[in-house]
Length: 409
Image 1: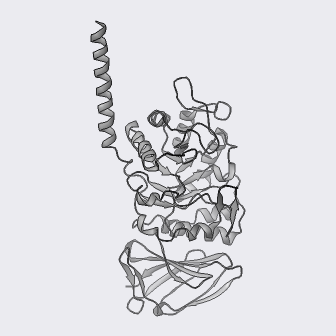
Image 2 (image 1 turned 60 degrees about the vertical axis):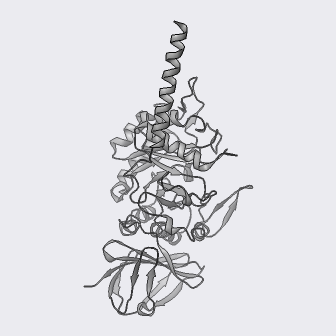
Image 3 (image 1 turned 90 degrees about the horizontal axis):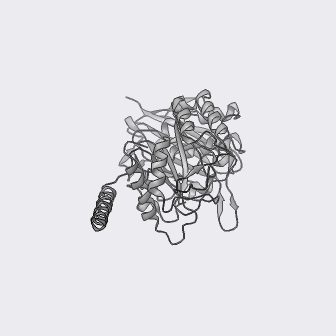
């Protein structure tokens, strides 16, 4: 009897393992998510570890009331520090002090607002803030997230010495697939292992740099690592645009709009992220943001560049040192043009459209302004014109002029 029981148990275990490996072999990342760059909010840039369920509820309310939801934002993402130690069965637990109602109740609240809830974990044994990571618990955690109603997983890269990143992120992808609930997987390993080379079929987005810092052009040292200003992150995108497209995006980190930079810097920051098809994940306090910040974050014309169906990341078209021109092919034959002033003083600039052929070898789009006339509209200022005459523009210090060009029949 005992031998028969052991054989039956062994047989059951082998069948279960075979099913698991078979399932993993056919696993794919959740389809139909991030056909355009994700839009939402994340708690880290403003709140760091000081988060609780009331902040998340109030932020969901503010996303709706401010018009951000109507403008396309949909994810409310909780970053590090939401959790405490695992229970006796190894199940991850939200902080009883800061999230006393539990994550399922919170997810239900967010969903009733027409929004989605995101959560944070780490490929290592501990997170960057020292909370429990998912190493060795990937399938268990993904099932827990599915039960709670989670829609987005930001998966970090702390405490990962001697771990293979492809294997670690593939395991979490497969765990999400096995959970049966679609979840967007945001790979956050800071570009250290060139995820653009291997992550297209694993995650929906991947970070290309270390963390952002709310400054125009600086490096903020934390000792063994650094955070980067807007221009520093922009400059690290060179050579990466060919890897981006629907369902797989280069992630330049969360937005710092409303976190202390000037209005011109915020407009430029938002425009750069939009043109380069980076996720638009706000990082400010939505509950108390100024009307100026709200107007920047809800500029639908700029958002439309980011959410364009072609999903082509902008390319640097002209580089004159402090003045750069970036171009982005758009659906329907339109183009986005961004004139970026990196300098500390405003610049008057004259651009002769017909003097320059635009050719994008990666997407196979081009413009010959001598053959085609375009109407242009300024997406930050109330003005318009066409390409029959040179453009005369004054570009603010640390600012941009962004135009949408539409071919004239």
